Image (cartoon, rainbow, N blue to C red; front, side, top):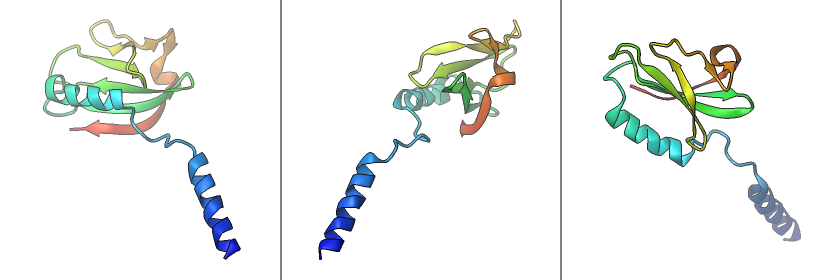
Amino acid sequence: MKKILFILLIGFVWAGCAKENEEAIPQCIQDRLVSFEANDACPSDASVKKYLFQGNRVYVFNPGGCYADQTREVLSGNCDVLGFLDGIAGLTDINGVEFDLFAEDEGYVWTN
């Protein structure tokens, strides 16, 4: 009986100390996605992708190709706007760093 209690205790301690789910999408990004899908995304080719950039997870909102010279908005996990990519100016850097060269693609959060 003591072994069973000990195993249960260890299980509860381990579960309580488990690392927070790194795959979880921050609530502000989820909220922004709802607004993006309803108001900013083109009927097709729109997406939201996550990247690892400068040691932080960032989210890139790509509205798709239904408007000429559209920019992709880059947000932090706290929904701070870090900058914009592409557009008529051909923007390529965030915080002075070439985004596409140094960002590690972690996949899609949403596509239509």
